[in-house]
Length: 274
Ligand code: C2E
Ligand code: CA
Ligand code: CA
Ligand code: CA
Image 1 (cartoon, rainbow, N blue to C red):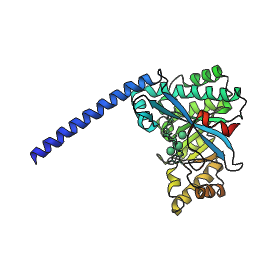
Image 2 (image 1 turned 45 degrees about the vertical axis):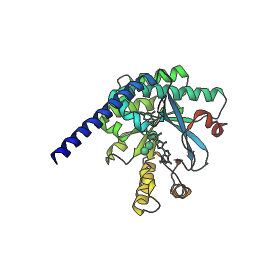
Image 3 (image 1 turned 120 degrees about the vertical axis):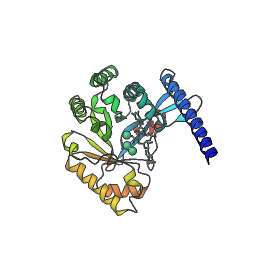
Image 4 (image 1 turned 90 degrees about the horizontal axis):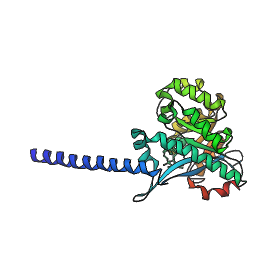
């Protein structure tokens, strides 16, 4: 047993070492990724339940790693947050999304909104509002085409700064969505304090919704809650027509998910806005 313990320990040491070395390498790769043009944005369409037409896109980051291929944000956003690189990356995302809007406008395509995900670190930068303003100014994008998605984590970490920044963003005309609603915190009190435009129901509530009455009740309640607070509601992770029909008949405003389309490179979404 002693021997075994020692081996296990050695094994742990080794795999731990290997993991931390891999992380170090990945972190240094990530540092170079921006300069090397390895980051890119995919866009997932959001549809209005009323018109069944696209009324915006969510920008989702991808990393086209020279050795590992396309890496999902779940694999590198946490690393970027721990190392602080996220501030740089989120700025790049904001800029890139605005450039994309400008390009679509120049091509005479239908005007649509782009929603961008921001991390807590980015949102709590002192000069955050100036960054947004200068990006909008440089690209010449009307702020009403930009939407910012925040998670409850971003807001609850420092509600005071969050409220201040949300109010400032709203005052320049940027729209704000509450992302992944209902997943992390149960505090509803901030909902009435924050001037949010949109509430996104997390896809975990949709997964078993059709088989699970409780999930149906929760989804219906979230839609009503949002409407009572004068917010629009988006359901994310819609994968089947049955889910869509349920949401539509319960007055959900917008839907997003694989049933409609997955996140796509910019060139593949022109069909939605021409
Ligand atoms: P999120 O903001 O909740 O984004 C939705 C995620 O669900 C996306 O994963 C999207 O591809 C996926 N999705 C959309 N429809 C469906 C569906 O019908 N079924 C399923 N199973 N999944 C669906 P993705 O692109 O891998 O992004 C994961 C997370 O990474 C995002 O979750 C967001 O929190 C974060 N992220 C993505 N881009 C950025 C970014 O530019 N900056 C920051 N800070 N975070 C980002
Ligand atoms: Ca999001
Ligand atoms: Ca989400
Ligand atoms: Ca989610």
